[in-house]
Image (cartoon, rainbow, N blue to C red; front, top):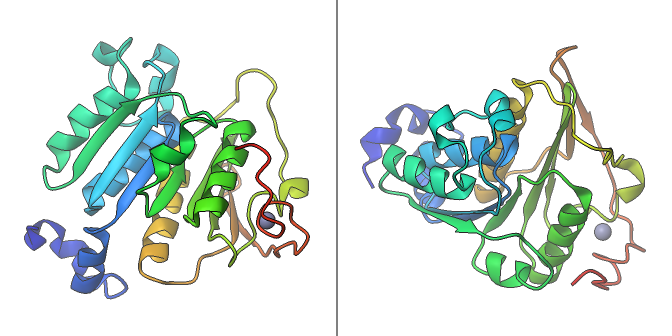
Length: 243
Ligand SMILES: [Zn+2]
């Protein structure tokens, strides 16, 4: 690893050279690569993560461009994960970047994440997030929820059996699954950045920040304390209904 590339972030004592080495040994699986997943993958590759799998089965559409950073007009129609693999590999040749064109299902999710040190949620639907939650709890892999809606984003770092899982808090998460999700274009990159910071903290063994909500219009951050539900069917009773 060429440490000089990371010199400016190594100067940050919270990371340091030791932290940089830790990051370089980690494998991340990003599921979904729209506004959130593509920005998170971009950040992590530049940060010097060891390897990253980007799993997505969609092709780039004109309507993706307002909230993404790496895609451009000539990429329209190509698989998003493939575009990201090509571009991000050029950004940092020390990172192993794999684009995997696959729709995540209950049949393939366990094999897709089996080598992951962390799973990053770049999806836009709760069904897949609950599936990620179950496989994460079952396989004991931390994962980080991220979602955006209008001007508000949410990030939740989940460490199975240590912090509440998504099922523990399902009553407090609103599922806005009515048609297209409205979102201001400048929001996902901030939420992706918060998601990646929580991932870094997790890798460095630091305490996570619970449920984070950010309203980019009101410029308001909120940190919400949530508790594990001992009766949780997923992380309490270990019943995996979706797998
Ligand atoms: Zn739970």
